[in-house]
Image (cartoon, rainbow, N blue to C red; front, side, top):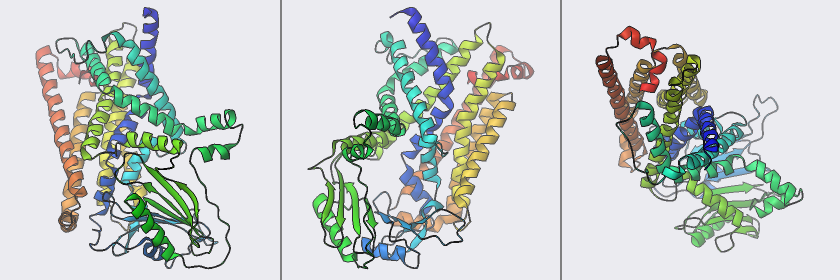
Length: 534
């Protein structure tokens, strides 16, 4: 391969990786945590309410309780997300008629309901931490953020491909080679290369699937214009999307028995309840029931059916025996992306790989800094900027996430704007840390304090669990719900890891100062280089 081409490719790889590093770290860090979003959601909920034990109420009974004493807009939707072993609550979304003097345009209520007692535990968004972290992963929780992440993923895919070309000749020959007797830059580069190679199948899969998910609108438009001659509806039909718009007949009809019958038929045919039930025009003779789920025991077996509730007529059906290729392909990609096709062990592997990519991102930035420091014409301001950006966009995100966990636990359930307060704690912590990362000159000391502070916040969160909700946690454990204990174990492991890393850096720093004969004053004058020495 031409040396000049490789040189330009290496520069593009280096600069592009540096530009997207902050957002890419958020994507992989939040995505790794989101692998356990069901457990995090239950960690939030269970101390406030442990599901009752007994026979689960039928979907029609849950529907009746959900719309009772509410201005239900029957001309719209009533949606149920069925309970599972991972999420033992019904999530019910009820479209409502807003009063004329309404101060909000949110025309639905989201309810978290006990599947046995039918009790309304809370609003779904009252426990927003898990969804907040997940949304940070794919759209930064901002308008049009999905497109931003889509283009970040596109550049990440280019960085992966360019990295393969750059190291093609040494990809397998030096696969497990890690040099410990070289200079700092070579050690960082070797670590970057080793992690990059070992996580390559994982990162390629994530880059491709993330690109498809986030930039879907772009190739949808291209397909609609080129292949379907502008017929977008035909494209949606071929893609397996069905939109139900039944005409309201204004003829009241109780179809609750039909709902339960159709759900029972679904369970008999596919071995498990549908994941989502959506009723259209519920309570009218024109009512439809839309059921979405999977066949039990198969890797990818999407099921989607629509029935008329007055006579049971099948209006639409996609089953494993009559699959839609686009729908099946999309679910295959989604299943691979979320790693939910096996047990906890696979998600733990995904977690380690995701955190490995986070290390890959940080090491890439440090390699860039080390290279610039060895160049005579390098700008100290640019090196200081990258140091501050790297520390702020990595350690700052980690500390802010820990603060969000703490606020999710200590905020009382009835507090107005509970979800907004939790998000504000994240944003404020991250913003403050970015300012500190820019103005604090001794980056190594700031990193040490940050690791200890994050460990203290997480430890406080664990203690708050037991101080505030010890009886409820024991009750949940006795009922067989292990999510709270699982999240606490994860937080405890993180505390131990952060304290270990912090004191390892501190001891290494003392050793470096003693061996080099640096005075504290001189070492502080090299503050902008401190992060790269860690």
